[in-house]
Structure formats: structure tokens, C-alpha cells
Length: 395
View 1 (tube, rainbow, N blue to C red):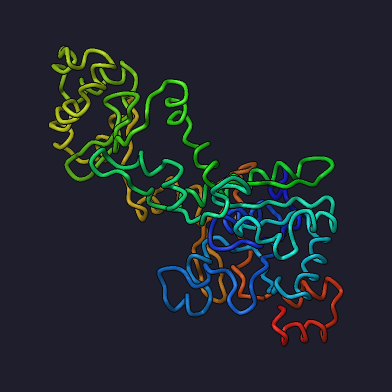
View 2 (view 1 turned 90 degrees about the horizontal axis):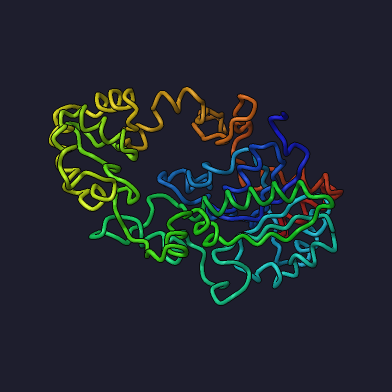
């Protein structure tokens, strides 16, 4: 199997901040040539976002660095007549165009799907938005937290006394981006090519909510916030030890029995409050308290090793630094080191292992407009024309 299945595919990345850039980064890691088309002078807003003010001032904010390696950058004012014409020329050379403007923006620029399809009938046009290209919410802002709230995610995140909570990272952006990357990859496999892909972040998120949604649609059960408890079984959730918390998923009766015996709590097996799965679910909080009387006598790592060895699924609750330093993750090479403009920098590669290999970024996130000369000259413009366009602010 080819480790770069999208090699030879050209993608125009007109996206900004996260959902679209993340989508295009995944496609770049699969071998596609991704040309990031940015606004002259400022570029992607993510260039000034992140925890390092100095990098933000330099237009290479950490938020930008995270998902823009292995891309090329050109600048183009699509509002100008010449910029508009140049994008149409560029589209003729491309297989895919991806944008995450609000619905209707590209049409108002005279660069909507129907216009660009006339230039390139095989073009795959992917529009990522918060709520889709039609219906009442189409013009609502697509900020991650807004989408989390409207999609119902926040209502089921946290405990009953703390919800609603937002998920601690931009879930809607990244799930929306992955959904778009999946859709583009599928559309590239069609023959003949050419499609309009309408990706709504809210719909992508709701799709991933799986049985939470089905329990309501099919079972009539309104989803609620249950904190760290697995509502389908008990004891299954987060438990205290002497030094940190662990997750235990004793979902089967034999796992529950093994757990109780290993903790020296055989008495719980004879307690009618915990006799069946439904009994344990109904009395889960009291049961957790009983189990923690034993669990808090020893450290997390001891319990994880012992319980997993006995067939009771158990795992540490790690911080992000701990997760990144974990021997499992480090050994599989998800995080690699790349030279970024003279500095060694750690960046995440593809989450996909293909034939035992993981694709890592081979080129640094680009400085704004770094590839203007190469791309525009390739399109047939002369050096003088490129210089004039730059002087006039078109590129």
C-alpha cells in the first residue's frame, strides 16, 4: 500500500483557524499538495493565536504551527478583480478546494461552486461551516464553543451539579475537520470526479454521539450529565487511589466479581444492593465509596498493573504532559521533531499507521506568502507581473 495515497492531488486551502486547516493538514500528511491561500498582510487568524506572544507577533503563532506544516502559502485578495481572476486560474490546476467561510461568502465574491465548477468540472468543492449551507442557522457563527452548546455536547459534559461544561479542547472544530477530510478522500475516489461537499460541524459532532443520541431517539431516554460515570454499567468510572485517579471498567459480571475479590471486598458480592448490573447501576455512588476504601490504600500504577493482569480493564487518568511522555505514545512515534525556520519543534504527525509507517510532516509551516513566486510563476505570470501584483496588494 502506498504510504502517501494522495500524492499528486492538489488542494487549495482557503480555510482559517482550525476546522479547515486541521482537515487540510490531515490531507497533506497523506501526500496531497496543499496550497494555503491567505489574505495579504495578515493571513490565517491562527498566525496570531497561541500561548507565545512573540510567535504571535511574528505571524507564526502556536495555533498556526499545530496544523499547517507541509503546506505552501500564497497570498491573494479575492475581493479584487485581478485576485478573483487569479483564483479561477488556480482552480483549473486543482483537484479540491476547501473553505470555511460563512455560507454565501464565496458566492458574494463571485467564486461560488457553480462559478468554479465552470472553470473545472472535476473540482471537489468542500464547504465547512457551523450548521450547514441552508436552513435558519446557516449564518450563525461557527465558533467551537457555540457549536458544542447547540449540538447538545455541553449538556452531557460534567456532573449533574456542574454541567453544562464545554469539552476541554475544540471538539467541534477537530471532528468537523476530520469529517471533511474523510469526505474529500471519498470524493477523490469517485469517477468521474466533481462534487459539492457541505460539512456542518454540528452534524459531524452529533453523528459521533452515537448511542447517546440513539438512547433518546429509540429508547426515549433524555441524555444527562453523569460526570465520570459510565451509565451503562457499574462499577465503571473514575476512582481515587492513594496518589491519583484511575478508570475502571468492570462492565461484565465476572470482571465485577474479580475486582471485588482482588480488593478484599468479597462481602460486597453478597450485598443485595450490588447483586445485579441494574442494582449496581442504581447504587453506583455507594459502591464507588466502598471500593475506594481499598483503592486508596495503594498507588494508581499498582492497581492498573494488577487489575489489567486479572482481566479488569483499568487505566491511569493522565495529564496532557503525562500522556505525551507515556512510553506507549512515544514508542509509536506520533510526535516528531521538525526543523521550523532554524528551530527544532515537536509536532504531531498523522494519527494513521499505514503499512507500519506513520506519515510525519516533512516541511515547516510556511511563512505568509512564502510560495508566491513559485505558484504564480508556475501559473504563467511573469516576474514583473508578480511584482506588480504584490505592489498593488493583490498578492
